[in-house]
Length: 259
Image (cartoon, rainbow, N blue to C red; front, side):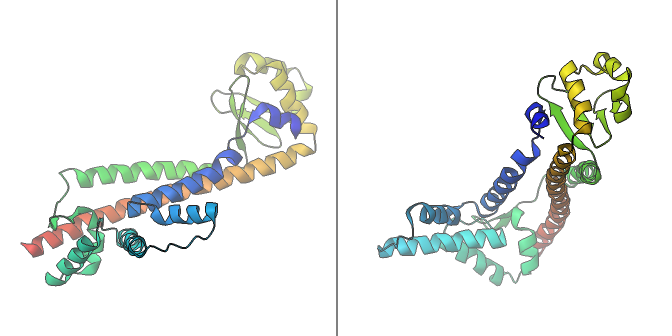
C-alpha cells in the first residue's frame, strides 16, 4: 500500500538481511581471530580465479588457513604453526582429556601453557546474564507470536501496534478500532495520542483498502523473521552462558591435574 508505506517506518525489511550477514562475519572473526578465508573468497570474486605462483606465498597461505581453521574449530587461539604444535604436544604430554581442553580453551594461555582461572564472581555474573537473557527471550517470543506489527509514523514519531481491525498505542492507553473511524471518537484521539490529523485519517482509510492486508502480511512476516532471529540469538547466548560455566569447571579440573 503506497500511501501507508510512504508515511510509516518499516525497519524489518531493511535490518533483517544485514543483521544476519554481519552476525555471521563477526562470529567467524571472533572465533578464528581472522577472516583470511573470507577475504580470499572476496578477492576471487572481485578479480576472478587468479592462481598464486610464488611457492613461499603458497606455503604461507596454507599455514595461515591451517591456523585459522585450528582456531575456528577448536577455539584455541594460536598465532603460528609452532604454537599450534606446542598446544597439541602439551595435551598429549599431560594426558589431558580433549573434551576438557576444548571446554576450558578460554582459560588456557597458549603462550605459557598455564591455566588462568577467572576472578571471583564470574559464576555469579553468568547467572545474572542467564536470567537477563531469559527475560529478553520471553519478550522476543511475544513479538514472534504476535499478530500485530510494530510500526512508527515518520512525522510524529509515534510507535503503535497495527493489525487488520485496530491500531493501538505502544506507550499510553489509546486504541483506534475500525468502528471508531465512522464516529466522533476518532477526533478525540488527536488530543490523547499526539497523532496528526493526516495520520489519524490514514489509519482509518487503510482499514478499507484491500492492499492493507497484503501490507500487514508482508510486514508481519518480516517482523517474525527478525524476532525469530533475535530469539535464536538470545537462546544461543543462554547456551553460551551454560557452556562458559562448564568451561570454568573444566579449567579447574585441568589446573588441579597439572598441580
